[in-house]
Length: 599
Image (cartoon, rainbow, N blue to C red; front, side, top):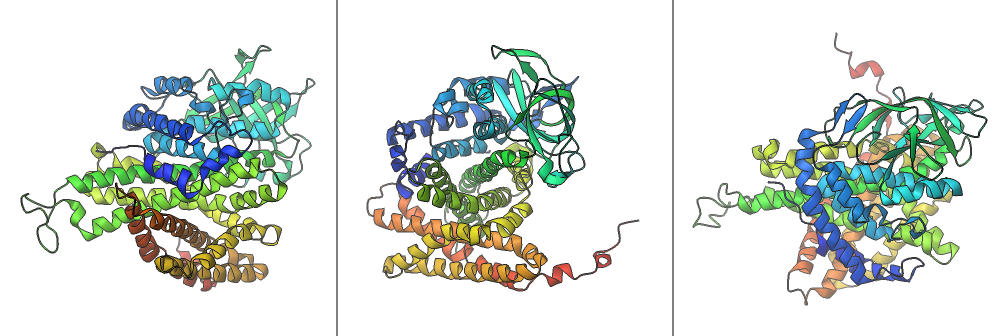
């Protein structure tokens, strides 16, 4: 059966030991988050995930959301779990105390998000979307908007959504048709239809606040004509309570492959009253405040599902008796040996473990850079940390979600036929993970963002935020005999990355299709190097602590790190070869040669 226990030991390792998260306490606003407080938060979150959210994960998947007469109901137990979630203050963990939040570091909040995603990804969608709306209004809302909406988001009585996609356009938002007609009182009337709206309608909160992309009558064409508006389901009264119903209605919910307990809605706006957020025609800037946060959050979803898949697969591999070890019986007193004795099963488990723990470290590096980019006491440090966040956001999103799907598949493989049926709960992870590679910008879009924007930004400044610490680590540790294998493996992969970046930049200047054809491979290449850098750093730390290791935690780190550097990081060689082969084989093939559509 699927199982979940929060990986607190590893979470505390990456937070306290690997990245010195205790130093965050010195930043303004984080003074109360001592190591003891951080650990207490993690432990309580672990209990909530294991005891409240995980037990309704499979039942929520099987029951799904229901839609009748415009009303969406979440599965049995979700409303009670949400009420417990809000009563515990979890909706406000990372929010500003000025609006009732607890002001926790983003790094701590990310670890809590991982636990939620591991235990019940569908449930996590509801507070997750609200957090994105909170971020957008924090950055671009008026003071009046902040005072009205943010406390409601923080306490969890109101929730938020992102309304971007329309039936005829997804990524190409310049094509949206939703209209915003100005009114004499300063509001607008919103008319149009949005699709794929996560948490667009549900029974968990008393109000749902939609952040909607639409075009004003004087909007220039394309994305330069998009504005962002607040459109609540119920219009707020002057005292902040819920007033009359707005012209917002759910037309239907989608029947999906996964995350079935998360309501994915068609939302119709029929002259719904709304208010501008930020400047007119500048809505994409505000929306990206939501999307960048959401992209990191989606990467954490993939990480959470990887962890859940690993735990379920490991338990099964230890308990399931099947066959004998290739060198003879390992447990001769039993009718067969456990699956864990078989090389291929062990390789699959190690792959999941190495990618999961490496990705968790990468997420923590980025999350702590986020904290420092906002709280550092000088502009240079804030910029340096933000550069790293900007560069690695598509890496976390794409690699985290590709890993989530691939690792969930490996978990099913370890179970064999029992993984393919619902009884053991593993196939749900595969279905839930698949959407993470698609929404908030497909992973192909993440690759184009990396190659087209992040690589060239500020004459390569974003790249330097990553390249410099990797190069410095290699130089600082090259002469350490204990680190020789890890440093050599990292240096080889890093050299391949530098060569690939140079080649793509050169070819892309004369032919953008060359950069586009290489984009996905290049994003994977830097992802493997980034996680390799994490494993090199974890190896260095584990070597220093392995002699005081009663539980074998650091020995496990060393063994897993060797596996990653030896078995997984060499994939950078194949990626480099593919990148250097160029894009002509992709782009020069005549369209007709793809084959005719079936008659």
